[in-house]
Image (cartoon, rainbow, N blue to C red; front, side):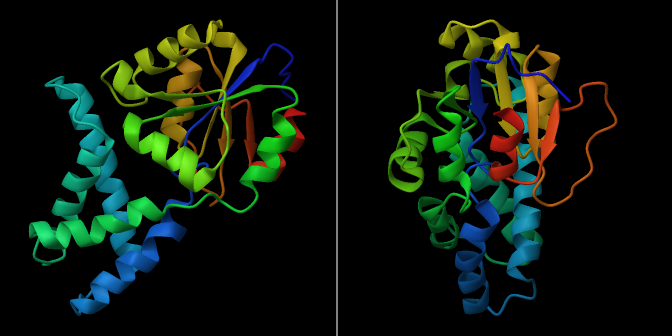
Length: 231
């Protein structure tokens, strides 16, 4: 079993780890799809949208033409997904599908687990999100007082770029091996582990992990198991 005695800070991914993206967004997606008699389910549309958003983020970082920001990659991915499903991607349609992102909610067990973990660790958000959007989500939707909220905007690249993790450790005044990345996204764990962080993979949906030497130090199903593993 992994030993976390050196760990001082837990850096949490927000989207899909603390916040339940699919559960929050699919009701809004379903409503908009039904209004257009679209021949695709909300679950399938969301899966396509999320997959495309990651491609947009990777392209944004690799091309190095200037950091577009999280919500812009969400919008681009939506535009692509709408057209892929033969739905008019007009500005009004895009705006309608995007409205659910202001209503994201945390997974039900998250806050109780954070209350337990704060006794032993500094709790920090380390997210691909835009600073103003993160401020809104943390304050209004998660409603938790984190020790810090760090956006990748400060380094101009999306996770898993190594600068994100190294800069976060530096901002916290810690060595990389004193930080543990908590994420439901395996690419996030790989990026953090490659930079010297420990990693906790929150695998709610039983997904496979990449064939890589940068494996998580612990894999859990939810935040309740996370707290049990780290305390």
